[in-house]
Length: 348
Ligand code: SF4
Ligand code: SF4
Image (cartoon, rainbow, N blue to C red; front, side, top):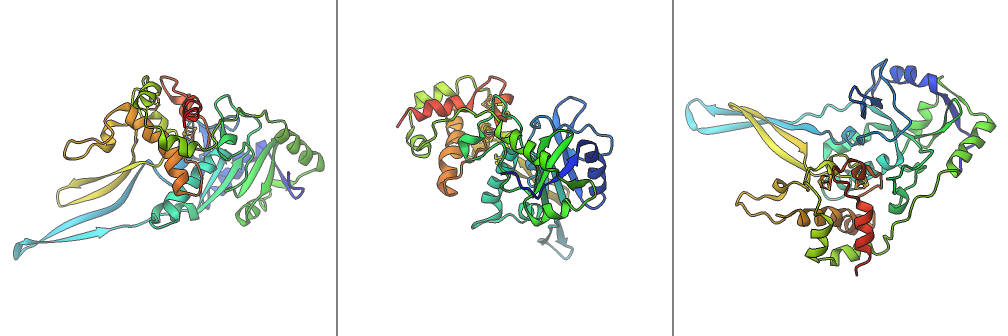
């Protein structure tokens, strides 16, 4: 139900609001770039806001940058005994308060996967945790589902507000704004927001109720079905057209595979973390030359198994997929994860 305590944010007030917020925080918003793709970028006055459709890339970089320095190091030799070396490590976090404006509910569900893996449990990543703590999320609820969306099959909804601080629903002339958390309540105190009229609250409810239902995927017991699905023939067949480009993992709001490399320069250097992809042959290639997942079928089985079997096993039934559909849109050979899941569901 739409809150009757909601506010209204006129479309024309958004650019100046973002510029104003940008004076005290880093503001990321979906922006149409020169290459016509829509990316979450640091807001600059005059940029072209793109709020009508899902962004081309998810905003996961806000907590998990594509490349980041984990630490720097420097070796010092003892001038009197060159067999003795001292290593100095430097690890500094430069975390700024950040406002993520215009994320979709599936993007926010993707960020919840990062929470499960990096900010809770036995191993906590201080950089991801600090970025998440410094984050305020303004979610733009969807007024329609795209043909590739399946969020409702994986526990989400185009209008889910879980994980958001402020939720916006498109209405005539702007957005109905509902504060979900104290951070959201602070945001709506800005003069850009005005108390919503009764007819705007009703319109927002109509917009939400009118969203066309998505196809429901048969995911009952998929966790057990996939873990038992050892048929090489099945995985060979579904992954036959895959060209191992890794696009599906890079555009995924819930994929978090990474690699760590040292970049030395003389007696000093940096340790860097970058996104990686389980769809790459090199991802599991061991120094010995052995590769436990040498074929496309092995890698594709792992990708699907991770998202729909191992992740739910480890995280109380939560899927490692938010149903955003970006992997379907971005795959150069049109491999459709929904079709693979439908086929897998017929087994077991
Ligand atoms: S696996 Fe595909 S549909 Fe699921 S969250 Fe990732 S990109 Fe979106
Ligand atoms: S985007 Fe398609 S072709 Fe590329 S790795 Fe993923 S499934 Fe394979």
